[in-house]
Length: 383
Image 1 (cartoon, one colour):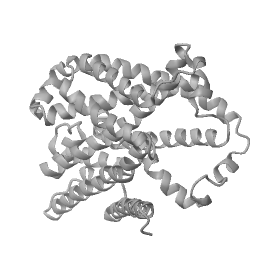
Image 2: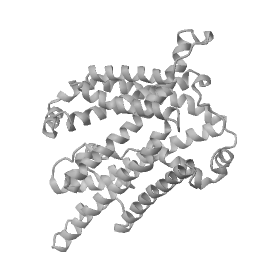
Image 3: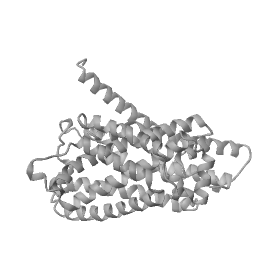
Image 4: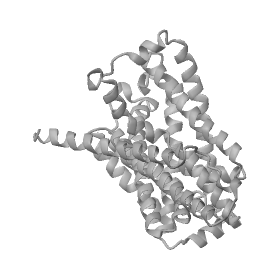
């Protein structure tokens, strides 16, 4: 629903102005809300979310490297091992050198190759795994290992991480632009684009819960190793590139006009990120990931991003943007303007549908906050 709301805002904005909407989610929100302060807040939250994702990726990459490298070097039988934290620091160093020295075009080729390997290995894992699940319904209905079998508690615990893996709304402005702001094609693309990851994610969980697939790299075989490696390579490069560009624009004197000129003349594809921006992109997630690795785990970073930032950015914000735009359409209609094709909403239900999504997003954030506060209170012995 939130993706369709953002597409609705983008299409109406294009129809009213006649020009393309900004591809940057921050600039898109700023042009819609006409508030630079809100845009800066969105940029800060977006940076934090990317930091959280990168913290998870670096921690997992360190664990993967500490498992694989001794085996590849033939040192596993001798009892020698690598510390995962030091391995993560090594991965971060390689990542810094790669993004800091290679052009955006070269990095995109590496990321594209990683995506190709990711899909090929995922198919090799999923199809045989699903074939060995004999009782799919029983696998889903079996009691969980947390919350004492309480389904509602288990769902609320997993929801933040689930939301983090399903985020796509920040590319909606670009999707609507590629589809020439056509309402029907955009609706189909966003609906199918939302459904396919959900089905794939559900099938993967079913395969794991049903015993058809192991998620341990040490025993999962080369296909699982390729899948995990490709996902970490692709997400890490994409995260650092996004953060570096954001820091270059915000902190290192590359304003929006300069960035736009680079995009238009193709210089952005051949440019490289500054070392300062890359260090800012990699340093904080590395430190945070190292601290979280020995505590609640690297998934704590995704839990924070999915529990607070995702509902705010991709739940409440689209509601505010669509409500402001629809209110403007209503005022124009009252003033005698009649332009029904430009006021047709992709999400039916009027303000009621916006209220439902806004209430659900707010409720999710408050529920997550209450749960976290309760955990803190319990941990310090006040309850």
